[in-house]
Structure formats: structure tokens, C-alpha cells
Length: 377
Ligand SMILES: Cc1ncc(COP(=O)(O)O)c(C=O)c1O
Image (tube, rainbow, N blue to C red; front, side, top):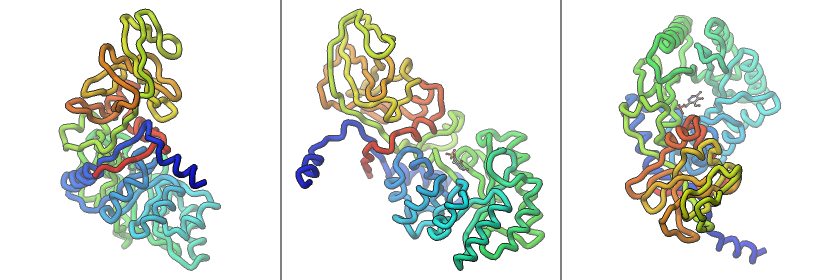
């Protein structure tokens, strides 16, 4: 057994993620400065947008008002390691999951009066009170109490002895657009808050602002920001690049496992989509769609090697991608950057999303959780 462990220590990472947590903290600071708000619900769901829940939580612990996650598993994991930082669970809980959430001291989201009653009853049975934020649907059309029923439902919730109504919130489907729809949402929410205040119902936290809204909406109605993507230095929309400067936290690297010469006319990869026009050098990387590289990106994708950009040769496989290095020399073990910086060149999550015809959120959240994460301060 000792021998096995010893052997494991000689294994070199073939592909890995590097995390610049100094940039994460800088991005957090930029968001605070830009919004003028100190309370932050840091959205670290989906394995901290693929960056690594543990590493990101370690860097943010004690520096944000809440951690926000989507699953009970993530919420409990955070509580175990960071008992001092409140954890907010966006996601729904089925009845059998509630006891673990209540005993874990997780702050819950409620989207219906029925669920609020269930949480309250169970909390009372357990001799405790559960902190909840009420979610209001002002136009996202997903989770949340429909705005027209909200005043009644919230008033009913105030009668529930097992709850602490600590927050009220909503979500924007078009956060980046300062248009009539967004304004209508804000007005409806504001009018609900006013109606409730007239009934002496007030909430400590009123929130709605994801990254895009944090950058484009100023309204005293909201007193906590709720950013995800920009914390990681990624822009939700190219139009927002002018509003503030964020730096990418994550780099993705892989080591060449094989270098080979391919002759003109020979093909590389599935479907024989790449047929070399010239004699060329191909580097094989042990990183494929099973690790999170988007299959759809292959026609447009490039990677960085020794400060220069090179195209992929053929389709992305499950475990490999091949890179067309042309005349450039390379050897087994050399490092290639799939996402991140190499000298003066940079590949962003937004670039890869563009190549694959998707959004940057999908690029990072799909990075395999088994990849090693190395924190660089
Ligand atoms: C309810 C809610 N709030 C906030 C966020 C954070 O959004 P962003 O990553 O665009 O800042 C998300 C992201 O999915 C969300 O679902």
C-alpha cells in the first residue's frame, strides 16, 4: 500500500488548471468599487464555475457575505470547511433533503408558500429557525413566486415561526440590457418592497444584480450584489468590456504526450476532416471533450505554444486533441496552453465559446472536476 502511494507521487499532471486567486480578489474589489456595494453573494455554484469549489471558497472565505451554490452537496461541503461564511442555496430541495439542509445551517431560497410552510414546520420540530430568502419571479419565468401573488405569500410567510425572512430577491433574463423589460422588472420589485414595508415587513437583503446588472444598473432598491462570471474575470457579454476591467483567474494547460511528423495528404483524427496540405509536425495533447474541451470548437480553435498560436488538427476526441505545429519543434512533456496566457498571447473563455458557438459559462463549468487545480497566488 505504501508502495502504491509512493508510486503515485511520481505521477506528473498531464493536464491541469492554474488559478490566480490574486486576480479573483482583485475582480471582487472591482465589483465592489463599481457597484458601491460591500455586501456580496459570491456565486460559486457549478464547482465555482468549473474553477474548483474548494480552491475558490478558500480564497473568498471571510471576504464575502454569502457563498451561493445550486446543490445541497456543494452547500454542505462548504459549511463543513467554512462554518463561518453563510451559505446560500439557490436550488430547490425535495422533502427528504430538507433535514440535512436545516441541520447544516444553510440559508435557503423559497419559491412557494407551500415549501416555506414545509421548511418552517420541520425547523420548529428540530427546535430551530431557518434563514430564507424569498425568490420573486418578476419576469425570468423560472423559479420564484409570481409577482402578482408575492405580497400575499410573503405576508403569510411572516406568520411562520420556523423561518427568518432574511432576504428577498429576483433575477433578470436580460441583465445586460437597460431596456423597458428590465425597468419593468425593477419597478415591479420596488413596488412589492414598498407594499411590504407598508405592512412593516422588511428584509435585510434585497438582491438581483448578477455580473451584467452589477455593471449596468444602479438602484438603491438592491443592497447586495450577486456576481458569478466576472469574479472569475470573464465577461458575460462583449458589450460590457468597456465598463470595468476584470482579469481571468483560470488557465488550462496540458503536456504534449506525442510528437509526430505527418506527410502531405495524410489525415489526423476522426472523420479524416484534417488532411495535411504539407509535411507538418503534430503534437498530441491528452485533453479531449471528456475533460471539457468543447467538441464543436475544433474548426476554429487554437492553442498556445512557446508564445505562438497554433490550430487544432482535426476533430476533438474523447481523450485527445491534435495540434498542427507546422515547422515548430516540440518534444514530449512540453506544456501547451489551451486557455490562458503564454507570453504576449492570450486565449480567453470568451474566445473558446466563440469558436464553439456557445457561451463562456459553458466553457468553464464543463471543465472536468477531476482535473488538478493548482493555486497560484
Ligand atoms: C440566480 C442567479 N444569480 C446570479 C447568477 C450569477 O450570474 P453571472 O455569472 O452572470 O454573474 C446566476 C448565474 O447563473 C444565477 O442563476
